Image (tube, rainbow, N blue to C red; front, side, top):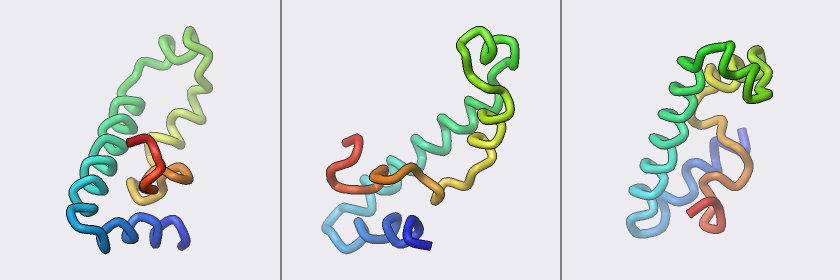
Length: 74
């Protein structure tokens, strides 16, 4: 529940919703790409196939801590 509120918080800042939308879209695209990655390639890279599948199925609002923060990745 708290992470969902963190997703909404930037909407209070001017143009904060644009940054929030772009970050959410980037997260969604990377998770989608992870879902299409060949399991053989994941094993070669040392990525657990089951963990990658779970990550790819997570909803966009279930983001890592700080992802939508002002002091996050951008």
